[in-house]
Amino acid sequence: MKVAFLGLGVMGYPMAGHLAAKGHDVTVYNRTGAKAEKWAGEQGGSHAATPAEAAKGQEIVFSCVGDDPDLREVIAGENGAMHGMGKGAILVDHTTASADVAREMGDLLAGQGMGFLDAPVSGGQAGAENGQLTVMVGGEQSLFDTAKPVMDCYGKAVTLMGDVGSGQLCKMANQICIAGLVQGLAEGLNFAQRAGLDGEQVIDVISKGAAGSWQMMNRGSTMCEDKYDFGFAVDWMRKDLRIAMTEAKEQRLPAARHRSGRPVLRRSPAPGRQPLGHLQPDAPPEAHALNRQSVNQRLPTLAIRRIEKPVAVIRPRNVIG
Image (cartoon, rainbow, N blue to C red; front, side, top):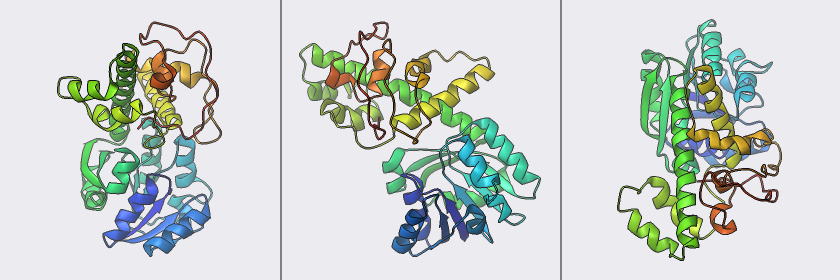
């Protein structure tokens, strides 16, 4: 199948590679053209200078960019994909964005005789590289049926959740759960080590009981070793939680657990634009856990406790797994 992939970040680069490896004719676009050229050289596909050029003549156009404004630009901007897509073509968006922008893009493309699926993914960089992503999809059944066999190239579970926007709503629930799990794990390990226990032994024991989780099995040991430079960037998690909090507010839903992200969110710049700033002095310890701190900095373990002084500026590649 002739497809395009727009956005070759840590997720998009390997996802597009899986499409090429499975025999699809892939044209890629990336804001930094050199990266698209590199991908084409490695995978044997083609690269284009604009989203519109990449989308021209393609049956399905995939996108995986940063946030709502990036998505609008890559689809509907002056050189956006919609200007190159033909009637009947489908755009599948893997960006974690708002449900509102998904519906907006869906309506826009439908008015031009094109299809749209919002299809955010979970599984992180490792999942993308190994072709083991979970894909949460919103859109029409007929469009899903056409696109699913292609998404299966990098997805271990590709599921239609409902109408356009439903994929993004499911991803919000996913991110709320992950943030809570990571925060709880960091606090639990910090407590264990401060109490004089061996962190690795604690993980080995409690992972066999009700506390066990994917995060514990895959990130617990690395937390104890103070290794964080892999997985999913903290600044992107902040963006995702901001989207979830906005949606919860619009729906007048309680979302107390993920409000712990507020102190981190207050002074964060746009994701990927510049290094993250200082945390608020009163940030709860789970917020610091998302900033590579909890175990190594020996922070207080109870969420109601407050930090006495701010922590240092952190690097933009900080990750939570």
